[in-house]
Image 1 (cartoon, rainbow, N blue to C red):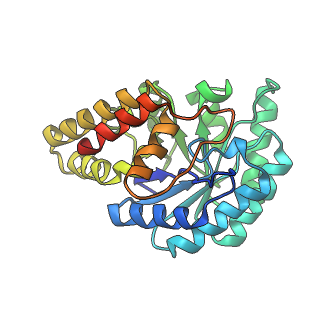
Image 2: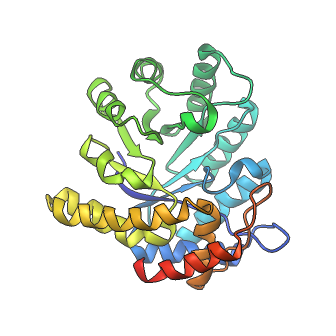
Length: 288
């Protein structure tokens, strides 16, 4: 069982879009010092769908080495190809990861039976706890409580769901209908709302630079201090609202660069942050 605040790690790049390994090490240390409870590696925030399979596996190895086994690690191995997902799952297993996760295969509008087979193949091959990445806005497949209940009945490796959706009622349904399931809230701006509906923790991208704030929010919620939790959520939402105007990932990288961790650009076709966005990110630093 995992819980708490897990950072969905960004991937720092050099100017030529190669992986900036030194900055990745600094980012991991910064987050560990912030008190986050774990890392989610190679997901949407990490720009994994813009990276090769070998680059994604390299990231797995770097994070495992830099984190030193101090916190749980979840490797996102989702891919359009089952074979690619299985290859990355085997690598995560070999490296000693605690769990794997996968978004549903996309683009071809696969039937439900194919998606279920994809997940059971990953569970069998990885031989690790599996967290289904439910991201209907990103890949067009929405994991309903009925489908989740069916999938979780097929293999004991299924451990939880990363629920990146505004459907908060589904969190309660997952928890009520599936024994011993762990559910992570996915959207940072509704972290507190997700916790209130039964989420065991949260996985988010703004935790890369706001880890301390969200750890305090999580601890406040767990201790019953809802006034503090609401205050911290409101502070985070003020920052996220500005970021959404310019591009969340670009803004996150700019903020961290201003904080001394050179994150470089996002990979194309993401557009670079314009001068107006850079000024706004500089103005946000005092709020973090």
